[in-house]
Amino acid sequence: MSEQRKKAALILADGTVYSGYSFGREGTALGELVFTTGVSSFQEVLTDPSNFGQIVVQTFPSVGGYGVNADDYASPRCSLSGYVIRELTEVPSNYKMTQSLREFVTSQGVVGIQGVDTRAITRHIRDNGSMNAMISTEYLAADDAVLEQIRAYRVEQAVEQVMGTQREEFGSADAKLHLCMLDFGRRNASIRYFTSRDCRISVLPGNTPVDALLAEGFDGFVLSDGPGNPADCPFLGTVQALLNSGRPVLGLGLGHQLMALAQGGRCEKLPHGHRGANQPVKDLENGHVFVTSQNHSYAVQAESLPAAAQVTQVNLNDGSCAGIAYSGQPALSVQYFPESVVGQRDRGNVYTRFIGLIK
Image 1: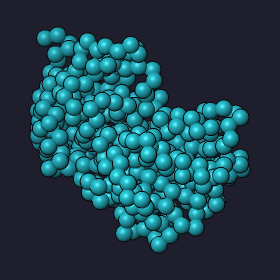
Image 2: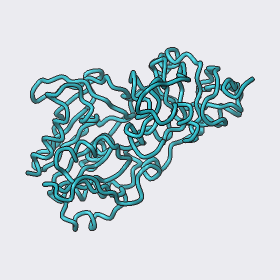
Image 3: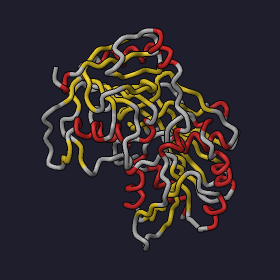
């Protein structure tokens, strides 16, 4: 049997086994099994830090048709644990392509499996919720020892694993506004959107001391997206101090959740999360409904928020909180990627409102 057709198995914590073939790194990978519904953007999925510790199922059946290029990285590196697809395109074609998907996942050390029924896997997660799983070329059956290993897996220190360790600068030094993005697992797209709005962005590691953040005179703070359970993030004190500083603060994804926790709110784990490019959100202030891209397992519990925190947007699929504004504070947050909203009327609107708070 050729290397490309080496047998592999996807084994779920409940004992369900899907048999297929390996691509990428051979070996064994453990993670939380989740699915994403995007038709394209597989490169962004692979490099999104919010997927740290997860095995991601790509629901669209044919993946890799346009290869990997230098422009579509969601972050500088690949963070997920494993990748599950129906069919790998072996002869991709695109003028920007620098690698095939097979070459990319192999170079990044990602354990992948193809030739499985991703529709059946997605329905299984829909019915039973996200659960731990294993992709392996070494273990092809669900014996007791394998299941014990799968069930014992835990995602630990997620933010610390994906956040940057060095300061980075983006945009022109002559830009009108100088913002600080606190990196909990930041995405390149949000940085690009701010720099296109004449903002300079200094990206600092999430563990930067509060005194250093406040001493520099930034015009505002952006709390980035990131992976894991927000209650496990060790930087909640920093978020609280920034909210108390009176400086404008914008929370994105994990940053949105951390802001709610810092104000006394709570977060809950969703049955299978929101992942993909077709999440409808309604703005309660103007009645607009727009389609968003999201990638998260947890949501803010609206009923746990204090009176000063007003839910401004909701996910229409399940009614969960998608946006918050804080009265008496120049602070707002959303659970989705503002730059990826479909439609010019609402795309980037949150960024515009945040810049308005600063000005």
